[in-house]
Image 1: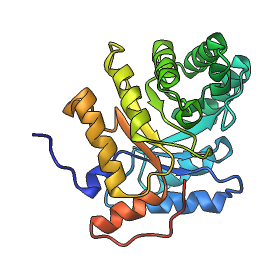
Image 2 (image 1 turned 60 degrees about the vertical axis):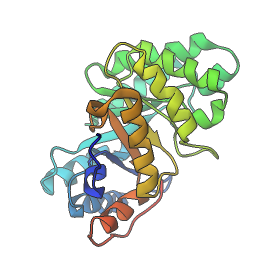
Image 3 (image 1 turned 120 degrees about the vertical axis):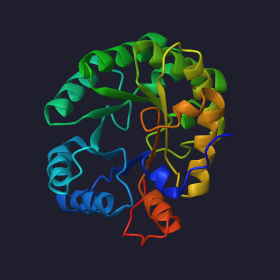
Length: 253
């Protein structure tokens, strides 16, 4: 039988996120402090590229060198220019980013232009080198199951380490229906790729439901931060409270 995780276990899967348009360095310092105060470290902090240095320095100062700094590129619009997406990726890595969450051009896919979607995915993969690449599909905008499946297959064929549901910036973000389609594509891709649920996940029950989906589709071994992530901010406080700690001033994704 699958192990039933504690709230603390789920914190290890978090990409603790702050992607506010008005984020300032002090907001990022508070995010780092929340990570440090948690019962265990999250997998990563996800911030805009201009805050990479602030996050990395403060995490290191707090003794959290193991926490990755993730950042976003081609975000949130999912532009159709592969060269621009690649430039943003290289600059983010040069600034100290460890993981790249790249929005693929979902509008191109909606228009039937699979080639542009594929070229942006390929460009981001090449620019990432050995860095972790999470491809954001924006499944709420794709909506149709066949399109979500196609987007998943293209991203995985391009070499995405993770496929991710959403930016958190559209009306419909992570859903279990989209997750099921994405996990099916991962199961069939022939390598141990990962899944990231992001956007609107605020309760331990929601997080647990995605974890159970991952295990059902990919096996118990996939329920690790190397293959399952949750992009959220407010969720941390709910998990800390459930673990018996004191919630900190949180935000929303």
